[in-house]
Each structure stands twice: as C-alpha cells, then as structure tokens.
Length: 141
Image (tube, rainbow, N blue to C red; front, side):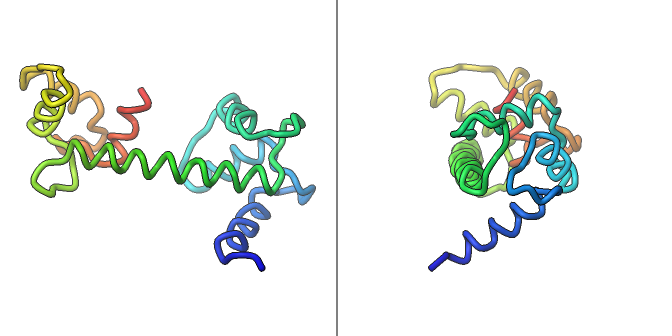
C-alpha cells in the first residue's frame, strides 16, 4: 500500500510532467519551479536532474523525482538546524549580535561591524536581520 506522501508526490510529479510522457525534463522542471517562485536556469535544472538521474537519460522518472524531493527535504532539515544555531533569544532571525556570538563559538573572532556587513549583504528585505530564507541564500553563496 502506498503512503499518503508517495501519492502526493505522484500528483506533484504529474503536474511537473507537462507533456505526460512519464518523465520530467530540465525544461519542465524549470517551468514548474518558476510557477512556485523558484527561478532556475536551464543549467541549474539540468544539474538537479543529473544529480538524481540513475539511468542517464537526462530526465527524472517518478522514483528519481521522489528521491530528489526526499534529498531536498533532508537538506532543508539540516539548514533549519544550522539556522537555529545562529538564532538568539528565540528570535526567528539572525542578528549581527547572534552571528558574532556563533562565529566566536566556532573559533572565528569577528568584530560587530563585520557581522553587520555580512547581515547587510544578505538582508534582502532590508529589515536589518536575516530570515531563514536569507540565511539559506547566504549559506549557498
């Protein structure tokens, strides 16, 4: 019997498989990701597919797609744990002060001005702190 999660992923797969051939191409992946607000270049879409393409056909089967989603979910869980390490006082953000504190714990002594510069560089919405999404951008830079 299939799990609810697998049935849901099969439905998502069918949405991504725009031409209904049972495979997701890099063009289809890119198109569907842009619908949900995540812009991928064609090269990035190809790289994502290549990372999970077990049979080397340049496309994702349902099983390969499910493995890709599971890997992305695991990556997100690890990123959330890392984000929590930088938070301070149960705030849902990273401040220059909390960044400085965590860097010191990791053995990297930085002054407050450098930490403020780092925050400013990745602070997309200009609120002076890093949200989880901004933190992810910083970690991938």
